Length: 318
Length: 286
Image (tube, rainbow over all chains, first blue to last red; front, side):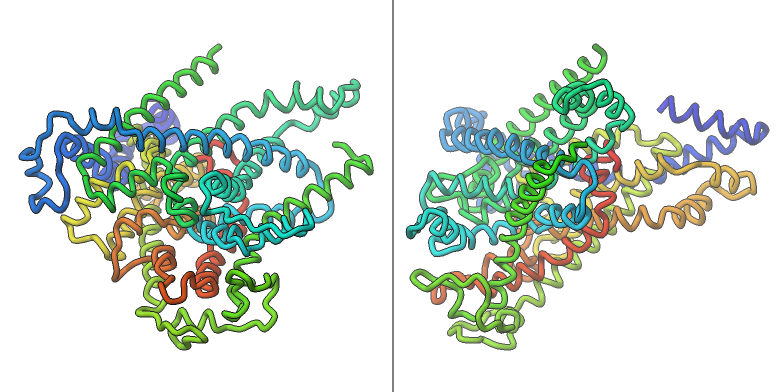
């Protein structure tokens, strides 16, 4: 508050010293009025729902019980949802699978995106057109992308056709119906769709590296890799952290493409945390339990993020 | 940077490979959309990369004007789901942009709502699946389940962080001299905002609105949870396009997928200048 407010006061009093305070008050009133809708929406979606979620998570309530959620206290279960969750192997497996997908997809997207961004750093014929085409995957509706890859990975589909041509003999793997390959197919779809995002952000960072420094380093005889390590990378540090954070956060939510491709199957082979919660919500309908899972994830994420932010701040000050 | 011939050859080879990988999935769907049923390549049939006898039957089929060679007729056409997607995405964008623009201006100029930037980032952080239980209960309570306006409301909230952050960076970048001059002329602050600032920001508003629209149009999970029949959106409807008699309706789904995929791709390319700013919450500008 303070910084922006003083700035405002200085500019206003400088222009109209006599009426400055009146306008300042008017500005504050208008500011409150303008921010009100956003504040109300945040309250509407954050505060009340979280309290409701906490309340329901302590009960066995399900929408099929025939009683309103506010009467859920009748189904109080002594924190059974939380103790159940601790030993719910399907939950922990889903969490592990989500982490595995993240640990493979995000670095792959980063490296591919960085490699492509380096290739796009200076001008060459066709750059603008290629650049636009490269961005297409992330604009495709994720559910549609899921359907595209569902078709590509059919046993009589194009992926197997290309592999057959390459190895010179028929290849008919049913990618999506065997547990090991289904997860690989799902990760390939994610990498296809989100490498462009890494490419876009990293390229924006690379282009922002000052050219005169690079030229000076070249004149002094620095090799390409030396220039990259000593000039480019330090400038890129924040940008890399931003790009990775965005993908880690979004990848953790992975649902659309995956659910369309495999529905979490075969069995539970591609069941990530979002898919698991969705299935419990829709199929088992134990919403008290779902609320408990959701809260645990929200709290865990909040702790992780505040840790990350405080570490980043510490690094910035050092 | 590096202009040697081998490097140039390597560069073009790598980029062409990347372009091929980028385009093949999309082109395969586009090609599938124009294939007659015989070329859908069920098991055993030869794979057709390009439709041998291109047809519009798949499009006619999903809009209910032809059943092509399929025995099934659809119990509902794609018209209503497309309308549902359009209405919910457009009005969701309107809600996000109105609240986001006003809030961003209030913060950028008057320092109001200092809690908003962080609160909105946090809103974005959580998986939607982890906050849907209360939303489903509330939406049921207000009679908003399976309505396009119910979807529009949740879309408006979900994409508010992007609208707010994008507009905040645009307002922060905008020089204040013109506004100050109008204030000296005796305009009220609200009038300055409505009559001077907003018209000046028209390009920024348009880019942000398109960005938010793409996000709303892309949703699958929320519509899956909050619509059941009347107002299902395109992706939810698409998943229902398979029957026990015909199995997967590849061509029909591909035709619908193409219809769903084309608008955001065109919009995204139109606003590519601002994509980085939008995706990084204004932390980076191109």
